[in-house]
Amino acid sequence: EAQVTQNPRYLITVTGKKLTVTCSQNMNHEYMSWYRQDPGLGLRQIYYSMNVEVTDKGDVPEGYKVSRKEKRNFPLILESPSPNQTSLYFCASSLDPGGKGQPQHFGDGTRLSIL
Amino acid sequence: GESVGLHLPTLSVQEGDNSIINCAYSNSASDYFIWYKQESGKGPQFIIDIRSNMDKRQGQRVTVLLNKTVKHLSLQIAATQPGDSAVYFCAGGSNYKLTFGKGTLLTVNP
Image (tube, rainbow over all chains, first blue to last red; front, side, top):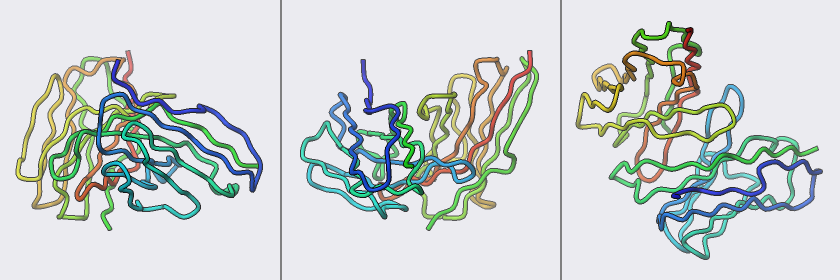
Protein backbone atom coordinates (compact mmCIF):
# COMPACT_ATOMS: atom_id res chain seq x y z
CA GLU A 1 0.00 0.00 0.00
CA ALA A 2 1.32 3.42 -1.01
CA GLN A 3 1.78 5.51 2.09
CA VAL A 4 3.66 8.13 4.05
CA THR A 5 4.51 6.95 7.55
CA GLN A 6 5.34 9.26 10.44
CA ASN A 7 6.67 8.30 13.84
CA PRO A 8 5.87 8.91 16.58
CA ARG A 9 2.19 9.77 16.20
CA TYR A 10 2.11 11.46 19.59
CA LEU A 11 4.87 12.88 21.78
CA ILE A 12 4.93 14.90 24.95
CA THR A 13 8.34 16.21 25.89
CA VAL A 14 10.08 19.08 27.65
CA THR A 15 11.73 22.26 26.50
CA GLY A 16 15.27 21.81 25.22
CA LYS A 17 15.25 18.05 24.80
CA LYS A 18 16.24 17.23 21.23
CA LEU A 19 13.73 15.18 19.28
CA THR A 20 13.36 13.72 15.81
CA VAL A 21 10.17 12.94 13.95
CA THR A 22 10.73 10.39 11.23
CA CYS A 23 8.98 10.30 7.87
CA SER A 24 9.20 7.53 5.32
CA GLN A 25 7.46 7.04 1.97
CA ASN A 26 7.30 3.90 -0.16
CA MET A 27 6.30 5.50 -3.47
CA ASN A 28 9.79 6.39 -4.73
CA HIS A 29 8.80 10.05 -4.66
CA GLU A 30 11.49 12.65 -5.20
CA TYR A 31 9.76 15.48 -3.35
CA MET A 32 9.09 15.50 0.37
CA SER A 33 7.90 18.23 2.69
CA TRP A 34 7.04 19.04 6.30
CA TYR A 35 4.11 21.15 7.48
CA ARG A 36 2.77 22.24 10.80
CA GLN A 37 -0.92 22.78 11.40
CA ASP A 38 -2.16 25.21 14.03
CA PRO A 39 -5.70 26.38 14.81
CA GLY A 40 -6.57 29.51 12.87
CA LEU A 41 -3.36 29.35 10.86
CA GLY A 42 -3.92 26.30 8.70
CA LEU A 43 -1.03 24.29 7.27
CA ARG A 44 2.29 26.07 6.91
CA GLN A 45 5.32 24.65 5.16
CA ILE A 46 8.45 24.19 7.28
CA TYR A 47 11.00 22.63 4.91
CA TYR A 48 10.92 20.73 1.68
CA SER A 49 13.26 18.56 -0.32
CA MET A 50 13.30 18.21 -4.08
CA ASN A 51 15.62 15.21 -4.04
CA VAL A 52 18.34 13.48 -2.05
CA GLU A 53 20.68 16.03 -0.46
CA VAL A 54 18.55 18.93 -1.76
CA THR A 55 16.52 20.80 0.85
CA ASP A 56 15.09 24.30 1.15
CA LYS A 57 13.22 26.43 3.65
CA GLY A 58 9.50 26.81 3.60
CA ASP A 59 7.55 29.58 5.28
CA VAL A 60 8.32 28.74 8.93
CA PRO A 61 11.74 27.04 9.15
CA GLU A 62 13.01 28.64 12.38
CA GLY A 63 13.81 26.09 15.08
CA TYR A 64 13.76 23.10 12.73
CA LYS A 65 16.30 21.10 10.77
CA VAL A 66 15.86 18.42 8.15
CA SER A 67 18.03 15.99 6.25
CA ARG A 68 17.54 13.93 3.11
CA LYS A 69 20.23 11.28 2.96
CA GLU A 70 17.96 8.70 1.35
CA LYS A 71 15.11 9.14 -1.07
CA ARG A 72 12.51 7.48 1.14
CA ASN A 73 13.28 9.26 4.44
CA PHE A 74 12.94 12.88 5.47
CA PRO A 75 13.31 13.34 9.25
CA LEU A 76 12.34 16.56 11.02
CA ILE A 77 14.71 17.54 13.82
CA LEU A 78 14.00 19.90 16.69
CA GLU A 79 17.40 20.54 18.27
CA SER A 80 16.05 22.53 21.23
CA PRO A 81 12.24 22.36 21.25
CA SER A 82 10.25 25.21 22.73
CA PRO A 83 6.56 25.45 23.71
CA ASN A 84 5.72 27.46 20.57
CA GLN A 85 6.58 24.36 18.56
CA THR A 86 3.67 22.52 20.09
CA SER A 87 1.65 21.64 17.01
CA LEU A 88 0.36 18.97 14.66
CA TYR A 89 3.00 18.05 12.09
CA PHE A 90 2.48 16.49 8.69
CA CYS A 91 4.95 14.98 6.30
CA ALA A 92 4.07 14.76 2.61
CA SER A 93 5.62 13.39 -0.55
CA SER A 94 5.02 13.87 -4.24
CA LEU A 95 6.33 12.54 -7.53
CA ASP A 96 7.16 16.03 -8.78
CA PRO A 97 5.08 19.04 -7.74
CA GLY A 98 7.31 21.60 -9.30
CA GLY A 99 5.58 22.88 -12.39
CA LYS A 100 3.52 19.73 -12.86
CA GLY A 101 1.18 20.02 -9.91
CA GLN A 102 1.55 16.42 -8.84
CA PRO A 103 -0.55 16.11 -5.68
CA GLN A 104 1.16 15.56 -2.39
CA HIS A 105 0.40 12.48 -0.30
CA PHE A 106 0.24 13.19 3.41
CA GLY A 107 0.99 11.12 6.46
CA ASP A 108 -1.51 10.92 9.32
CA GLY A 109 0.31 13.46 11.44
CA THR A 110 2.43 13.72 14.60
CA ARG A 111 1.06 15.63 17.54
CA LEU A 112 3.87 17.22 19.51
CA SER A 113 3.44 18.84 22.91
CA ILE A 114 6.43 20.74 24.29
CA LEU A 115 6.10 21.54 27.98
CA GLY B 1 4.45 35.51 -0.52
CA GLU B 2 1.12 34.03 -1.47
CA SER B 3 -1.85 34.07 0.82
CA VAL B 4 -4.77 31.79 0.22
CA GLY B 5 -7.94 32.27 2.19
CA LEU B 6 -11.48 31.02 2.44
CA HIS B 7 -14.73 32.95 2.49
CA LEU B 8 -16.48 30.92 5.19
CA PRO B 9 -15.04 28.90 8.04
CA THR B 10 -18.08 26.57 8.25
CA LEU B 11 -20.69 25.25 5.85
CA SER B 12 -23.70 23.13 6.76
CA VAL B 13 -25.74 21.34 4.08
CA GLN B 14 -28.44 18.72 3.87
CA GLU B 15 -27.60 15.28 2.61
CA GLY B 16 -28.20 15.13 -1.12
CA ASP B 17 -27.76 18.85 -1.69
CA ASN B 18 -24.87 20.33 -3.62
CA SER B 19 -22.07 22.03 -1.67
CA ILE B 20 -19.96 24.94 -2.81
CA ILE B 21 -16.79 25.85 -0.95
CA ASN B 22 -15.02 29.03 -1.97
CA CYS B 23 -11.42 30.17 -1.85
CA ALA B 24 -9.65 33.42 -2.71
CA TYR B 25 -5.98 33.75 -3.51
CA SER B 26 -3.65 36.71 -3.85
CA ASN B 27 -0.64 35.42 -5.79
CA SER B 28 -1.23 35.31 -9.53
CA ALA B 29 2.00 33.34 -9.98
CA SER B 30 0.53 30.07 -8.72
CA ASP B 31 0.94 27.34 -11.33
CA TYR B 32 -1.78 25.15 -9.97
CA PHE B 33 -4.38 24.86 -7.24
CA ILE B 34 -5.39 21.84 -5.25
CA TRP B 35 -8.33 20.99 -3.04
CA TYR B 36 -7.71 18.72 -0.08
CA LYS B 37 -10.09 17.03 2.33
CA GLN B 38 -9.06 16.42 5.92
CA GLU B 39 -11.01 14.10 8.19
CA SER B 40 -10.56 14.15 11.93
CA GLY B 41 -7.30 12.53 13.00
CA LYS B 42 -5.98 12.15 9.47
CA GLY B 43 -3.76 13.96 7.06
CA PRO B 44 -5.07 15.98 4.10
CA GLN B 45 -6.29 13.86 1.22
CA PHE B 46 -6.09 15.01 -2.39
CA ILE B 47 -9.46 15.64 -4.05
CA ILE B 48 -8.84 17.47 -7.30
CA ASP B 49 -6.44 19.94 -8.83
CA ILE B 50 -6.53 22.50 -11.58
CA ARG B 51 -3.74 24.16 -13.49
CA SER B 52 -3.68 27.93 -13.76
CA ASN B 53 -4.33 27.82 -17.53
CA MET B 54 -7.68 26.06 -17.01
CA ASP B 55 -10.97 27.42 -15.71
CA LYS B 56 -12.84 24.22 -14.94
CA ARG B 57 -12.08 20.65 -14.10
CA GLN B 58 -14.42 17.83 -13.16
CA GLY B 59 -13.89 14.70 -11.15
CA GLN B 60 -16.17 12.17 -9.59
CA ARG B 61 -18.95 14.25 -7.95
CA VAL B 62 -16.59 17.23 -7.67
CA THR B 63 -15.93 20.21 -9.89
CA VAL B 64 -13.34 22.92 -9.40
CA LEU B 65 -13.80 26.32 -10.99
CA LEU B 66 -11.02 28.85 -11.34
CA ASN B 67 -11.66 32.51 -12.03
CA LYS B 68 -8.32 34.21 -12.53
CA THR B 69 -9.89 37.61 -13.11
CA VAL B 70 -11.07 37.84 -9.53
CA LYS B 71 -8.53 35.33 -8.13
CA HIS B 72 -11.16 32.95 -6.90
CA LEU B 73 -11.66 29.23 -7.00
CA SER B 74 -14.44 27.02 -5.78
CA LEU B 75 -15.07 23.37 -5.08
CA GLN B 76 -18.49 22.02 -5.91
CA ILE B 77 -19.57 18.70 -4.44
CA ALA B 78 -22.64 17.15 -6.02
CA ALA B 79 -25.16 15.16 -3.98
CA THR B 80 -23.29 15.69 -0.74
CA GLN B 81 -23.11 12.62 1.49
CA PRO B 82 -22.40 12.22 5.23
CA GLY B 83 -18.96 10.87 4.33
CA ASP B 84 -18.15 14.25 2.81
CA SER B 85 -18.16 15.85 6.26
CA ALA B 86 -14.63 17.12 6.80
CA VAL B 87 -12.43 20.21 6.62
CA TYR B 88 -11.65 21.29 3.07
CA PHE B 89 -8.51 23.21 2.17
CA CYS B 90 -7.53 24.98 -0.98
CA ALA B 91 -3.84 25.33 -1.75
CA GLY B 92 -1.89 27.22 -4.38
CA GLY B 93 1.43 25.96 -5.64
CA SER B 94 4.44 27.16 -7.56
CA ASN B 95 8.18 26.50 -7.47
CA TYR B 96 7.85 23.45 -5.25
CA LYS B 97 6.05 25.41 -2.53
CA LEU B 98 2.46 24.95 -1.52
CA THR B 99 0.47 27.56 0.41
CA PHE B 100 -2.73 26.45 2.13
CA GLY B 101 -5.86 28.31 3.07
CA LYS B 102 -7.19 28.01 6.59
CA GLY B 103 -9.95 25.53 5.81
CA THR B 104 -13.74 25.26 5.71
CA LEU B 105 -15.56 22.77 7.92
CA LEU B 106 -18.30 21.06 5.92
CA THR B 107 -21.06 19.43 7.95
CA VAL B 108 -23.60 17.24 6.19
CA ASN B 109 -26.92 16.88 7.98
CA PRO B 110 -28.90 13.67 7.43
